[in-house]
Every structure is written in structure tokens, then in C-alpha cells.
Length: 500
Image 1 (cartoon, helix red, strand yellow):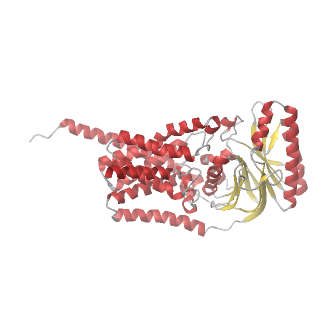
Image 2: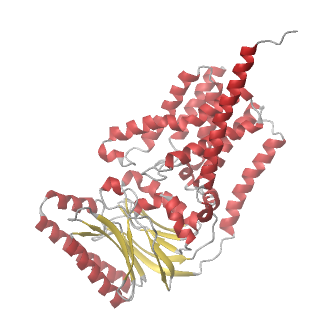
Image 3: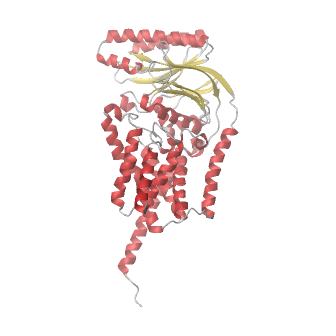
């Protein structure tokens, strides 16, 4: 097989691996290897423009397939989602372009191995900064099943993982280009990568025991129930909607009492489990307060209020005295669901079980906001959520990163998706897939979990996205370096040979 055909083999391998890098069929090594072969293909390409188009298709098509239906754009129309991915793909290919130019200009020097990871990390961070989708789709989430690598976010946030995975691809190409001979620099770099993974393993193995635990129960509505009822409200039959909501709330209160009598100390419902017009949600809050007093429990109660100028998506925590001790208004993705946007200021409450807090679903996709939990030493974060089939594993996996970044346990009760409970190291204590379990009665994803409650000090809340910002500055330096080196080269050519 000649070199030209080999290039297309590397492209084909990259395309196959992109299919399993971070989407619904996530395979951890795929992200490490996909970039390796993509770099190899593009560096070896003589016709950069044509081969950029091939790489564009080889990266965009697998992403369109593996993320099909997993984004909000799919609710507008599947074609909108596909076109969005197709148009966004070139941004993700900029690091390959910069890497190729540096490689062609400076050769296979060791320092060139840093070009691609700096550029890839900078573009990953840039794509997330200011995005209404938060960090949805960030490269680091491809490591959601690899706990040792996930531990890195406790220091660097997501961007450290992106850098390391990308650096591996660049280092592998350096070794490849040098006939697979490991020189001192390559061996040292391999040692650094091994040390990082070793520290991740060590952090898990030497993890401290939780200070305490609590028996926490959660339950969700059957798949599609929330959307069905909200749709009913917009259909205009107010009397029928009111009756359906009142019946639902009565059933939920009975379920809460049943779980409390089974030993639950805290009970959590999915996002939007309480809903209705203002008078109905006020009654639900009052009834839940009485129930919390009678059973001596905490209730984490999400409520979606309709019939007002702007719907409100809120989560309350009610204590055993019947007091609503925490109220959080959703701030993530509210522009898409048309609800009131919260301030993003995290609320906490001190309890006999530790410091508790609560957010809602999409809020967890904004680590730069949620680092408040680490700053305030939150022990347990509740994340009532509501997903759909195509996004269930992607979104649940993202939430586990927030646990590691901020050193806290997470209890994510999800409708139409995956409910998880994690410890402060991202280890899954319990997992319930609403699409895999058999529905019993009026509720789904019912879980009763002995949940670890404790906080672990991490560096990320203190430095935030500093690593991402450093990479942006370094990337700007790389672009400036290309400009200056090109200018010097042009000046040298124009000056011509020096006279003898």
C-alpha cells in the first residue's frame, strides 16, 4: 500500500473513532486515537485545501450520527441539528491546520508536539465560553467512563483533560515520525502521562471515607409525562389541566409519604414534578411542608409554574420544620424553554446531614458557575433533571464531572433519562435508566440510596478556568508566531542572496 493510500486509511480510522468519541456510544480510548490518526492524515497531505474538506466530512458526519437527537436543535428539526454540526466542524479543525503549518515549517521537533494540544484546548474552551449550551459537547466529556482521568478536573477543570488527550495524539505522531524510537524527551513525556494517570488512580484508591451518609430516595414521572402535561396546559383546556395536576400532586405526596415510611430521610423529585398555575403550586408547597413536618424529612421539590408572564422553573428544599429553606431559580438553558432566568447565585443550607444545595438540570453544564459549590464547601448537591432518550448517558455523565471538580456528592433524579448518585470522586453509587427499567405504578426511576455526604477540598474552585484562559493566550502566541515567522521568511526571500 503506497503512502497516498495509507493517508486515506488514517482518515478512515479517524472517522470511525470520531463516531465513538463523546457521543451516545462513548468509548474512552476513541478520543485519544481519533486525533492521532487525523493529525497523521493531515500532516501527510500535499493538497491542504482538498484534504481539509475530506477531514471536515470525516469529522462532521460521525458527529452528526453519534449526536443525532441529543441537542436542543433536534427539537426544532433534525436537519437543523445536522447543519449546525456541519457548519461548526471547521472550528474544531483549526488546531489541525495550525499543527500542520508548524510541522511543515519547523519539522518534527519535540516542541512542535505542544502546538496541537494548545490549539485544541484553546478552541474547546473558546467554544464553551459564553455558549448558552455551557460546556455541552466539550472534549473532556469523552472520558466520562475513565475515573482516573476524570480526577484531573479537580485541579484543572475540563481543559486539563483536553490538553492531555490531545498531547498524547501529538506525542504519538512524534514517535511515529522518528521510526518509533523513544528518545529521552519522548520517554520523559510518556512518564509524565503515566504519572498523571497514576495520580488519578491514587486519588481514587486513597480517597477518604465520607463523614456521614443519609438514606435518600428519589422518584420520577413516567417517560414523557412532564411534556405531555405542559402541552395540555398550552392546548387551552384549563379545567382538564387543573384536574390532572391536582391528581398528580396528590399521587406525588402519597409517594413521598410511602418512601419516608420506608426509611428515607431526604426525598427528591425530578425537574418539573410539581407544576401548575400559581394557586396550585402554592398549595403543593403548603401540603409538602405539612408532610415534611409529619414525617420529619427533607423534601427537594422542583416546581414549574405556568400561567404567569414568564414561567418559573424552581427547586425548593423543605426542612423537617416545614420551612422552605432554599429556593433556586434555573439559570441554564432557560432561553430555550422560555422560562425566567435565575441569577446563577448558588444557595446553600446547613443541615444535620451536612451542607446541601440544589440546582436544576441544565445548570450543571456550567462549571464556571457551579464552582461556587466548591468555594462554599457544599457536601451534597441535588440536580433534579429531565432529559430524553438520545441525551440520557451524555448528560448524566457530564454531571459526574461537577462532583469531581468541587469535591462533593451529587444526587441527580432524572425524568426520561438516567438518574445517578455519585460520591465526591465521581464514582457511581447508584444508576437508574428510566428507559431500561420496567415501569411500576405511577412513577419511574425510584431509588433508595445510602448516599455518602462529605466535601473534599479541590483546587478547581479556586483557579476556575485559568487553564483554559492560559491556553487561549498561548494559542494567540502560536498564531502570532506563525505570522512573524512568515514575515521573516518573506523578507529574506525579497532581500535575495547576499553579494559576494
